[in-house]
Length: 166
Image (cartoon, rainbow, N blue to C red):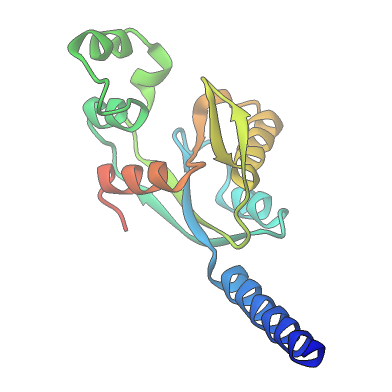
């Protein structure tokens, strides 16, 4: 009887190891990094992405300018969007500049996404690899909010839909 229990444990361990390998290989996410002012040379952004072994540069594209309403849609939760909030955004000089000129978009693949509760405007579960890359690029180039990175899958999908990119 003990012999069969030992065999069952070994089989379970093998299946668990296969499951972990499979989920590690398939658990990837695609995000976008936006350089609103096209201020960083393309090769520099690509090298900063490649500094993190978990991240992989996929492609770059130059996006044409977009209407201000699209910018508000990107930064505002559609459930809480009101005319008052829209008018508040119209007073934000930095936000008004975003999207007026063509900007650069970089597709980034995270091969090992890890989420933690990170303080932003509020505490949210954010992708650690992308959040830290965004902070590093902002600090290195002294750009502040001129760089935007989607740090969760829903945000990435929402932005790609608004920007009409795949």
